[in-house]
Length: 316
Ligand SMILES: C[S@@+](CC[C@H](N)C(=O)[O-])C[C@H]1O[C@@H](n2cnc3c(N)ncnc32)[C@H](O)[C@@H]1O
Image (cartoon, rainbow, N blue to C red):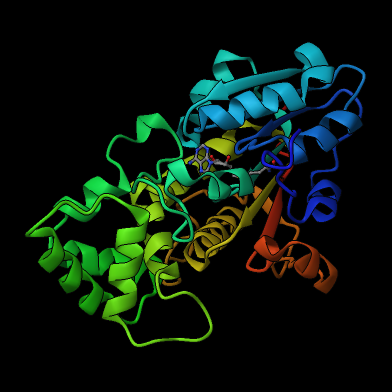
């Protein structure tokens, strides 16, 4: 792999400890990227364990294909968004698997590639789609969303304090021309907010646009129950997130699935019949060590949560 293609897997040791891959096990990596986590899972599941790797980005799929070539037909790759997890798994007969990993967000190669438009630091088109099937680009959104919608996106997904000012500046600018480049948007944002020394003023706006362009939260919300259903008894779900909204969504899903009866307290006997289906393995989310943060600044905001399927009688 060239240095341009490299992606340093985040929380690798912790993810492997919790996924606990053993010889001949079947696993799904729902965000395979360049195959960093997948490679280690495959090493531990030899000689005949299988891994289904999913990614919306055709370049990631191609990168993984090359990176994981030594594992031959133990690896199956599927290009698409992970809210289609059930379909991908059924197509390739991955049911009752031992573990599923989600390592959310963008990879370093995606951030480094100017033509993808993820970075405000490199001149490029305002694209930001993880994969071509996302449809509209970030540029389409910036040029067509109403001012109110832009405010919602920047404040909700970017927790941007100056969402109103930025949205107003965009609407004013686009009345005379189409905003199509990362440089132009980044400059516009920088000019509409007071100078902050900590982070680049466009950081939050770019993050928010990426989340909106790829409908990231909806896809995660829809993928988690699918992942739960694909795990066999004792199967492990591991999710690494980089944004507080993603982490909150994962935390709530795990809490709901690990709870039994949800009947209102004034009902004397349980009528819902709900049994807990997951046991949470990380009471608090795991964070990267100081050493990892120093070595890989992209890991700084990572949080890992994991859970295990509770053995059900009559289950697999
Ligand atoms: C942080 S990287 C994963 C890196 C990988 N674990 C590794 O070690 O190389 C996240 C990957 O997930 C993909 N991705 C993000 N959201 C996705 C989604 N909703 N569906 C499918 N792929 C997604 C991105 O295209 C990216 O390649």
